[in-house]
Length: 442
Image (cartoon, rainbow, N blue to C red; front, side):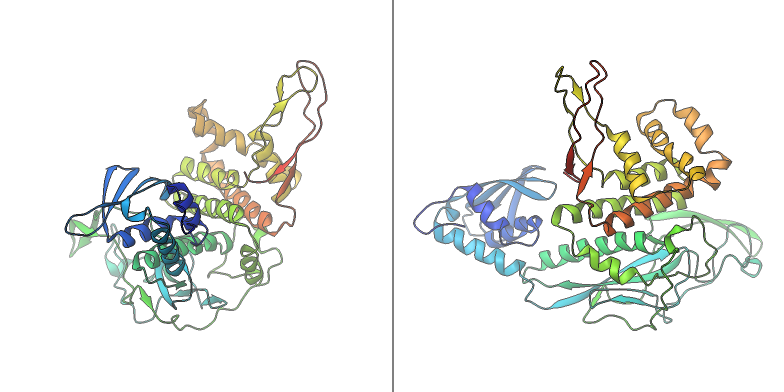
């Protein structure tokens, strides 16, 4: 924070701003609003904020990477300690959660019907679409509507759901919108992990897609716009009303590779699991968010029958939680020794997604499959062996199960923050080096 009578550098001011905001991605929007909303970009990473006067001055220059300001250079209007204190106070006010809240909505989809709403605290709710939503007859590729097979029900699959999240408001509307997008994405990804069947949003498509159907016996090709409209506003003062869904017993709930459920099942362990999310520190929360995102991407890739993309996405979900323990030097010959990513991937699965001997053999080979697809080694053989009919019946559900189970058990583990590596043997000299402990996530 700026000290009165002492001129802070841009980096000092940036440290002060980071100390008072909830998310440092909001700092850019605080500075933009304080400057008057006038800015230009020299490059995608370099922004110049200017005052909104008849003769604009440079308010500040910033370097931005991944939405976060990494370097700040002060313009003349920010060179006094009072101006810096005022900016920090503005950031504190706009970042505080004392300005009320609104409910923001997003349409999700599931491969199973949802019979009632699930609500956790006064924070998030997942519910079916309102009965007032108009849904027309399903469009088929080759059949008239009267010949629609029973599997093509009027309202799915995929079945539309409504995700509702309470978002703290800010006097800065851009910060409010960004909060809503972050929280909607967080809860969407979290629920794809905890509630089997939830797929997330539909993948982005072109503005219009080609469809084909018979109309009055005449084959017609048509361009249509893809989308779904619930008829509700994107935000409101309170959650929507729906009957509360009955929770299912948690015992064995996540152990099933396949299910014959006719509707979404919500385990009675879900409220406790969601409460565990609040115990994560900022680094662990970011890692779990990344893992949940990749898990959801894998689910949607499976839906599109893009097995290689699904495999690498499920693997990325697991790798998001792996430790970052650097190799070290042998105490005898100074050669580099230590465990690599393959060891930690397999150890993570043994620790958080254990299986019996038969399925364990399949599980042990999953990282090899992932590596072959990602690195391109013998990729044609992998396509033939792994993505054949046998794999579609067993390997793909196993990849999904491994990722979901390991994410859940990692969250539930009290010792998730530490790992114990093996005592690596130095192959050149035979020296047995000591074990290493490390943080689970760098």
